[in-house]
Image (cartoon, rainbow, N blue to C red; front, side):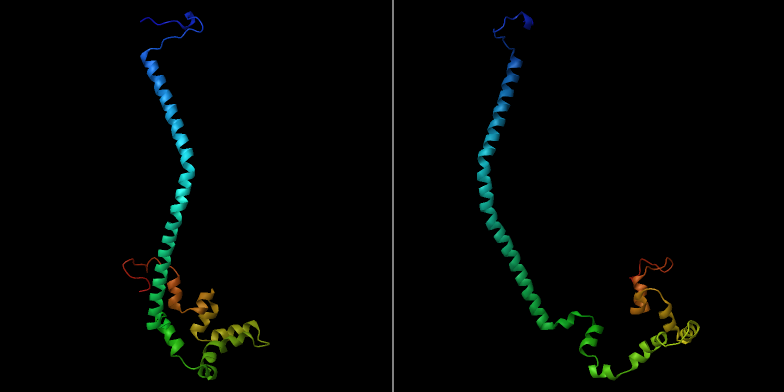
Length: 185
């Protein structure tokens, strides 16, 4: 069939379509109709789906929260029974437990002066009136090695913790590090 010239057709006269163009036009119209139907269905089902979600969500949330709360209550009951049976002190480190429960009486602490003599008395040299800098330095040099190191060390951790615990806080030197050994061996 020879191709027709569009200019040659008189206005208002229908131009016959070939099969391929007709099929494409029908598919396009079908796609638009399906899209319109799908949009209408979504619009119509939106209130129903919102209602259904709210209607089903409330029992699901209640069930979930109820089950979670029941698990928490069961675990709490178990912990309460366990701590009642063993006592809270059983969860403390042994040294702290002994100090809290088996240590000396308050009267013994108040009358014992060894702590003051060992730990506080050497700090008094900073409060002696009229002691100049040179005399204070000489007094510090006369103290035992451990006290001198404590007075001249930087950082609060060295004042409060033992040398072993301070070493645990610091990274190991390269020559001391061995990955096969547990930390603080």
